[in-house]
Length: 233
Figure 1 (cartoon, one colour):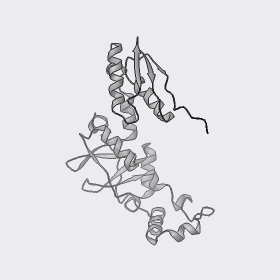
Figure 2 (tube, rainbow, N blue to C red):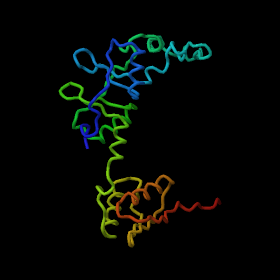
Figure 3 (cartoon, one colour):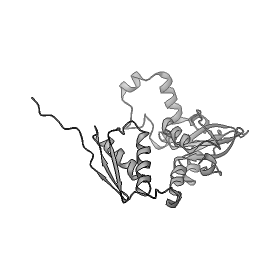
């Protein structure tokens, strides 16, 4: 699947000259946590999100609000550039001054796997989808969750024999470093029996999940063990 398959085409946007209060109202009215900022020429010049509006002097959530004054040592070690930037975020009146101008975007044929990696790596919740430099949609984390929820179970391949199940599990395990070649996989009547010696609970669980994820598996029985601890001499 690609961005075009899951994106929201009717994108709620903000204008750079919009007031912070108007932007906050637009987010609240549309039940969204962020939106692109688009100039008069239709170019995406920024993103504004709830995070950009959390610390505001109007609602006493700024650093200098009574009872919330920042520790003096944080101010001491912060650069004047950082302090000035924080002040602007807390006091500026227009979207242009509080938005993030580092826009990360994708195109319509960007695979969902690449989008998921991008959202995670950049620690962002949404990306604009562009076509020839123009905004045509947006993909958010919730779009990816909806895509997952929409996949019908009967659309997934099902192994029809014990040998096919065995081969599918071995193929899956062979792609991962945590799956050691010493493991033993036996399948009888759709029930998978796993033997291995692993170094951690995470490795044990990963091997079991790899087997459980093969369609056609009825049950996974784990005989996976940890290395035997030798008694102290």
